[in-house]
Length: 242
Image (cartoon, rainbow, N blue to C red):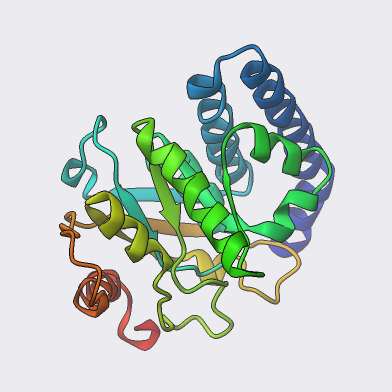
């Protein structure tokens, strides 16, 4: 009975409200950025949208370790990727101005993809060496303006709930700019909406913001930096997901 009532709530109340919120958020972002307010409108409407998505989905988010980061400092945040609600929870609760490094395919989402483009989100294109250079240049533009970037170094949502191998891109960027890497553990998003799910379930997500790891300037061997951040992320996950 509870499941039936929840599904009725999802389709009749939550879904229409979230669709409306998504359209309004995208519109506000496009208009605000067009008027020259990219710093505010490129982040805060989406942060409100992410929080609203969690609240209306009956997903509670707890944040630990917020005192490990400073609001005025640029970071390269690296997080594990458990499911769709990783995006909503980080947007809504990280509390730090950032831009995503996201898949190129997301640019094709009607209206939303355009709002992401005008707000300065970085679309990752690995189709050629020239495309990779353009991706890095786009990320550099955001970092040079005092913003941070958030990257899922696994590259895709986990299919089994476990933490998988990390790719080098985020760490190359951190070393090039000499920026600290901040590991972020997302715990709980997999049980709410795993990769194969169509609809979410109520639940709880814990975001653990770990202490920054200084990247240094030696890019010849990124492995220690990658291993240290992966170890930090794994430390706040249940043993079966590490």
